[in-house]
Picture (spheres, rainbow, N blue to C red):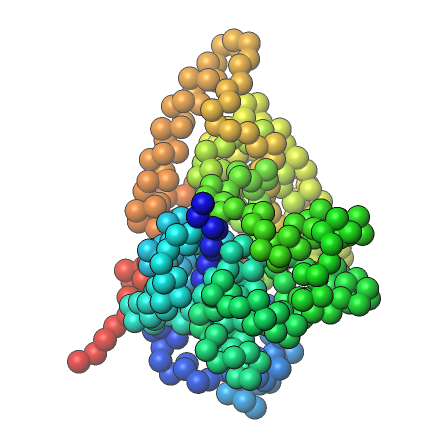
Length: 440
């Protein structure tokens, strides 16, 4: 029987690495990528980490480092990151028989039966670096949890010389190491580095005298289940080399779909809120169709900022049921706007709004009703064709090419509710108008 073998491939400082692809001047400089509305750091280069910038650090607290240490801060460019991720994943898929894209910068691969897995991993990493100029690290092990741990070792061995043997940098294959070598690695790795061990569980384990990965591996799984949870028991079994988590090829459909955003500026007028809610509801409906589901209800909310307590505070939400479960953008937007009109109150500076689609069900499940004279089922089928055409146009020419009139015009200046992205670089690979210009 072929023994399980998994690899975890991870892009190093992925958002920053994507930015450096088109601006070599960023190499060697401290760089951070900021969240929506340029609020806080969501990605950091190694140089930025060396300055002590922590993940999630608010921009106003680290802004002084622009002048003092040459820090470069960029607005998130998710269109660019998503496209580069697709390219990286297509190259990574060649390494294994099966692939699970775990996040925008990580994927698990099934290497069972693959000969010379370490050499093949090095070759894949070099190809990604050569074709995309993206640095990556790969961890290989008999379970997904161990592969994640091996990836941590590969990264640390490269970034922090002396923390682990240098030969494990970039690619670490725990399966080819001896038991003694693995025990040394586990003994020198804190238990908090284990996939699935969060800060709260980590503190509990430390209080129980379990400080390293080796300490956790040596626990009895039944005892772990009794004292903590079945989830941590599974983690221990995975660390002991017993594969309990297979690749997830088709993630389960979401039970709720939400699109929420904080505004770039405070919004006071109902007309502006309608534009924002139309945009959010349209995007939620598109996501709903992408997973082939229907929604039975629409929740819309608006609220002021809790970070300005001196200003009048207001927060309200409402759920609007749909007559028939569907994924029609027109019906979902109309429901969201009807709810917005019910909860809107003048005189407040609104900072955030959002739309959630609730009670989701497969699109194959039809709902019957009495004949009310309007033939709603036939209308739904007609609208489904319209939605297919809408999605096809936006997929081909870019999101927002076709929108509802209540969303306003994307070219309109001064839209207060749009995100603040003052430092966003061009969308080099997905927008014709922002292609990189090379002078002779």
